[in-house]
Each structure stands twice: as C-alpha cells, then as structure tokens.
Image (cartoon, rainbow, N blue to C red):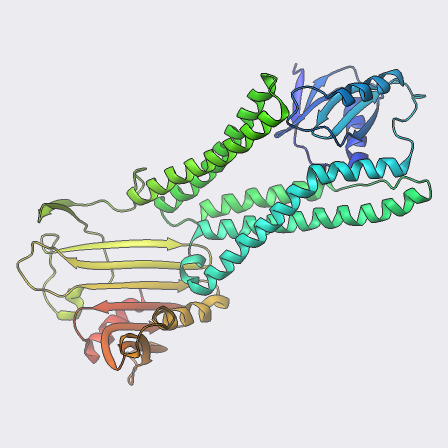
Length: 465
C-alpha cells in the first residue's frame, strides 16, 4: 500500500479558498498534504478524518529561506496556541490545519487579510507574472516580425510554430491570472470595508486545460516534424529547458538543505538558471552548426579531396535535373553531387534541391538549384507568394538601382502555371525564375538562360514535385 502520493498543483498562489477546500476533501479521503513543490502537492496517508485548513500569507517569508524567520516562528506559535497545526509553507503561503471544530479562525480581520495577501502577491506572484507577460509579448513580437520578414521559413518550421504556440499560451495564461486577481482584489477591498471577506476561487480545470494544451502543442510539433534533424532540434530544445529547470531547482534544494542564507540561496539559484541556460544554448548552437548529434537526413555516398579540402558527395533523388533541361545523358556522382533538404509543418512545406558540379570534374557543366513551397492552408498562400516576389527588393533596398534584384512577369507563361516571373538585376535578366500554381510555388536557379521549351519542361516537372 502506498503511503505517499503526489498531484499537480492546479490552484493559483492566491486562491486560499479553493486550496483549503481541496485539502479538506483530500483529508477526508485519508491524505494529508505535507509539502508543495515545483512538481505539485505531496500527501502522506492518514486515517480519513474531518480537518479544517487555513491558508494564510506571511509577506516577509521567502522560498529561499532554509528555516522559518523569527517572525514566522512567533506566528506559528500563536497558531499552535489557538489549536492550529502547521502543515507546510510555499514561499509566503503558510498552511495550517486543525481537527477542532471550535478553533478560532487564524485571520478575523478582512482588511488585514486582504492587505497581507496583496503584499505577498507583490513579493512573489505579481513580479514574476508581469515579467512573463512582458517576455511573452517580446517573443511574440519577434515571431510576428519574423513572419513578416521570412514567412516561408517560420510557417514551415515546427520549432517556430511550437515556440509561437507556447508563448501565446503563456500570454493568455498570464493575462487571465492578472485580470482575475485584479478583479478579485478590487472587489475584496470593497467588501473588507464592510467587514466581509470576499472569497476567491480559481478554476483547476482551466489550469489543467492550459497544461494539456501546452503538452498537445509539444506532441503536435514532433508529429508534424518533417525530418530527423527537425525532430532533433525539438528534442534538444525540450531537454534543454528540462535540464535548466532541474539544475536550478537542484542547486536551490542543495542550498536550502545546507542551511544557506536567503541571499546566498537566491544568488546561487539565479546564477545557476542564467549560466545553465547560457551554457546549454551554446552547446546546442555548437551541435546545430556542426551537426554532431548525427541526425542528418542524408548521407554522403563518397568523399574526395580538392585543394587539400575534403568534400562530400551526395546522391539524393531530386525531381528536376540538369539533364532534363539539356537533354544530356544522366550523370553519376562522379560528376554531380545532388542534395535535398526539407522543412515542413501542417501549414507550409519547404523543400530545397541542388545539383552541384564536383570541383574535380574536368568538364564545364551547368549547375541547378531550386526550392519548392507547398502552402497547405490557403490563408497563407498570398503571404508566401508576396515574400518570394519581394524578398530581393527588401534585401537590396539600400543598394544602387543597378544592383537591385527584382522579379518581373514573363511575357509568355510556361504551360500549366498560374503565373511566372524572371529575376532582373537592374535592367538585366538573370537565370532565376519563379513559377506559381494554386497552392504550389517553385523558385529555380540555373547557370544558363532557359529557353521557352526548357521553361515548359521545368514547370511541368516542378508542378508535380
């Protein structure tokens, strides 16, 4: 038989009414709460009994205190004399219980009770909530800036979409919490002036729903990831957050166990949070750059040395090849290296292909590269198309006109396309083209100008790619 159990803490820090009622219900079932931590409430088994709980607040207390302060000890002694037994502390929150039905309530003055709770909120809940609100607004602002500057990358990247979803959830949760508390405090002050304490109740179902949605976002991001590399990115991001939390809480618990002062514990905890976040981000950045975790989606078929540098050769299947445009026989990896890359979400899929001439090839043959964008949600088609058409205009805005690149519509549309464009630098045409279909976009670069027949061939193959 289990003698301890844990459950998620689904009550807000200021919900003294809801938490006390829940702890009484659990005591009637034979479980007495003895600690609240990061992971939730811990209970120990007791004989089922009727207990009264009182959730009070001591503003001068801190989660970084290894032992109760002198003021807290006096307060607990006062409660013990009144028949209340101390259960546990959570930062400024102090929880007591009693089996005596005639025990005098710990707090009897509504005005003092409201003021004490508000002072505790200013020390603990409000600064953190406001900080997270500002941070979520900043992060969402950065993501909205990103969707304006490069919507194809953002909308096709499961990591970006996960980040956007989570920060939006943080924003909603913090706005809801602040708004709920502000409305309660305003009403409680008015009621206290008339000698009444206005009870507060937050919704555990709402908090559980927010947690469930966050987990759903994470699972969806993994399910909709298009490649092992992207899954690796997401996995490392989740592990990084988890490790940072574990290290921070571990250092805090160690300091509290060793009896360190409030200042030392706070400094050590904050320093660990910053240094572990910074260090893990550096490690992740190094892995991203070097791809040391070994989850690349393609594998080189051979390597060769040229000018004392080792080059890798790939033989990825690609839908459109140089040979399709030139009519030449298919070349092998001894001539060309063909690579592919994909990034996809439930909104947009972005694929990139290349056919690069080996440096040690004695022949002077053309090279080819192109990217394909599939817009799965029609709402974003115009956004992606506009970005592809205007990306070089935005990039080259500060360059002299003769160096600015821009797309112009082709006089004759390749067969099957809804629109087609050729890139120009100043007034000179370049060997770069953009093909558009209803939900399909393709941008192509070639070493030579394409004839009308070659444009038709490329459009026909890319339309079905």
